[in-house]
Image 1 (cartoon, rainbow, N blue to C red):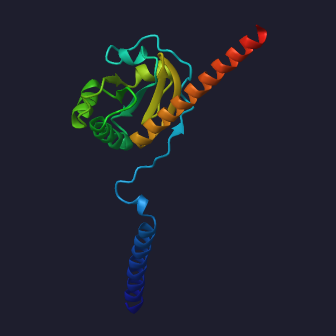
Image 2 (image 1 turned 90 degrees about the vertical axis):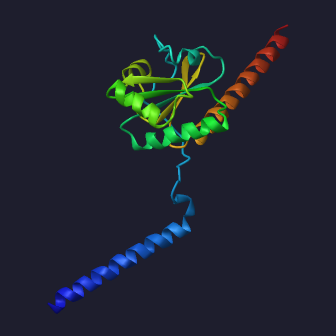
Image 3 (image 1 turned 180 degrees about the vertical axis):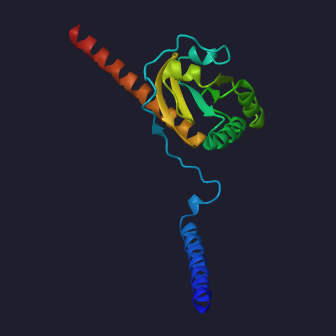
Length: 198
């Protein structure tokens, strides 16, 4: 009986020590506290870069016809991170979005997708409820959520996995700036070559 009491006392002390260590770790890494969002934006390799949809849902059609970068955020009703991203989208809309954005809700049935849109107040965005993710996977190969597909003139230019909406938008803007600089350099180089030939 004494052995059992000592064992329970040792285990209780170990649990207290474990929680103290976790508290110390959290104090040393304040950025990992409540509300922390990983700012990492990674390329999504499954998406077919260069793909052009054969058909766009009417809700998203305006995104396909723009020269500048547009973004299609793919969310799923079965994804915990998507719940947070949906909330971020609403907050981000109120602060002003720099990249025209639409949302695809991948879900088992239309009712679940519509409830997701209502629950997160996503009505300020063009939203397409994609049952079973058929459209977005067939047209672009996207099967991961949350993901951001970047389009230029209706063609997939880049695809990302993300958890922070601001970080995604920054990556898109940075990529757009790089593409514009490359296009300007190519134009200058072509002009210089034309001058040399003349």
